[in-house]
Length: 347
Ligand SMILES: [Zn+2]
Image 1 (tube, protein in one colour):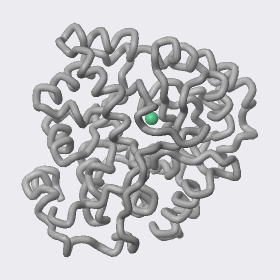
Image 2 (cartoon, rainbow, N blue to C red; image 1 turned 90 degrees about the vertical axis):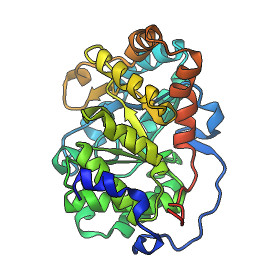
Image 3 (cartoon, rainbow, N blue to C red; image 1 turned 120 degrees about the vertical axis):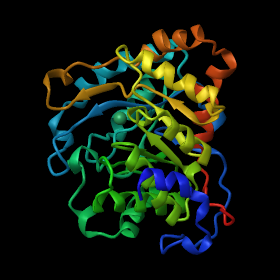
Image 4 (cartoon, rainbow, N blue to C red; image 1 turned 45 degrees about the vertical axis):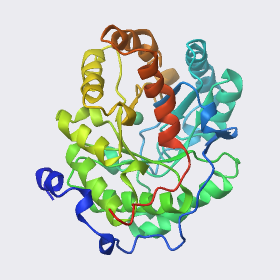
């Protein structure tokens, strides 16, 4: 469906009969509002100031080649740690590490960094179908969405690769819309995993068309828009699309905050604030990136622009302590609390 038609029809147009085979068999049960960090579960009220989208280490070699033997974890640890310590001195307490499996996710490294820095770090389950599917493993093409979801749910229940580290959210990537078959399957698997586990779905989107299609897939899967974080929503130049998604209950993430984009991000936040949607906005930087394959990880982008430049710029435009608290503390806790969010039967 074209975005305009979809906007006009709205998610509310479809009744319960639209629920497809993806609907979970078990009745949704309330889950305590916790999130699993790499060092164990915490109450989401302990998250404090949170960066919801950062990367400490990434390997774009491809799903069949990405391997921990390709880097020295000790060198990576020593390179990354000072950047996390810089965050702690700025009052940041929690960082969501958004690098999926087959793209450089390393739970042991993350746990070690968390222990050394004191920063609470959260990792993820799910697959990354963006960047033309470079990080999609072969089995994802032959298995069903249900089978993929079972893999991710298993990581949530038993931990990742025997480490005991459990994911705190589902991270999926898709390319620009219309969704390819594999990208659609990943989103369907995410919907199933959400209904199994209550993990929030952070979905990297190539463009606004993909973002709207994801809402349709989730709707068919019986999942509320409230379970969906529209990652990279800043790339959609239509402000109204973000506001509409927020109105449906989705989380709109403006995650490319950096020295070259402060102005655009400030305007995007102000636009949503004026529209009364600040309670659905997440901000982060998508920074870091120890690049496996480059000497000493290449150039690591600090995680501090948000605190040093972006927040002062927002304050200069009228946001106060309450609004900053909403963006950096309250919204991350509400967005990522582990809780099943089925689509309301009446919607
Ligand atoms: Zn990212």
